[in-house]
Image (cartoon, rainbow, N blue to C red; front, side, top):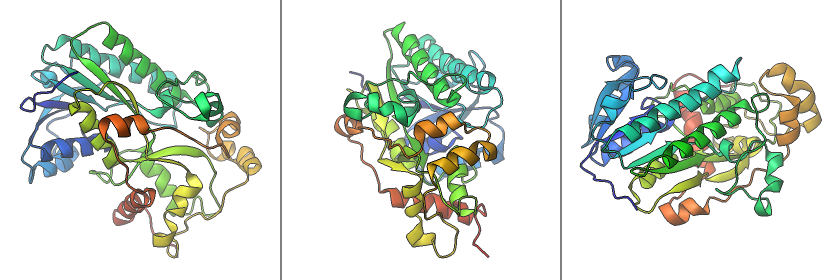
Length: 355
């Protein structure tokens, strides 16, 4: 049981990122001093959205120069912090070299942050943004989970460097985190395992696979239909709230699935139809699995036939009750999240009306 001193600064890695932006906002609104390690603390363009957050908030933000892959570079930013949020991690589906682009950075980044926590006497808790990808690799695996439902007790055992390498990298990074945590006894570890994150960004131009996927619903790419690829979905603001509660709930510990909805691409697209269906080519039907299996690997090089066979038309089912029960988490409606992220894409010229 760990109680964090609310007068001490809080460090957030990856502060300019999609999820971290909302965590920083919450901390600033609550009056905290945020230590934000970034690659270039003197880049006003890169930091303008974070600087804007503190203009009307009681808290303050301090930037430090650091790089996720440089050992020891977080020392200055972490000094004096009792609580560390580690959100920085590579997230890309399209990679040429999974080992160099996903697996090594994920493990090394986790190691650099957590080993620095061990070297920093003030640190008492680390909250890590993991992924449900460390719980399950493919929807076909869910039938092997207890009662066919994913829980925090389940681990991804089927992803490899050749099949679902992103999921494999998240699994290895989380195992690394627990191993480093187990070698010391001063700070505790809370692991959040979110599903696909959607909703508006603090920085509307943040690099996020979520924005890339939702954009496809409105730019005509998917106008003929979408796959019924089951997945969990969570609003970025609900995920930020989950981080805050994981940091400041004394009893918090272990893993938490953070996912608001068991969904799929067709349901996500349907959530956009009432608001945008008349003016944008929102997909309205599911593509048959045989067609997806035949065509998608040619169109999307990162998608393999094995991935399609093991995920399309198979539901994604997870139990989020541990976070609801122990952290008091709640989730906004899917339609609200989808409408707001899509509207942000429109407002910033990333999706345009059909002609």
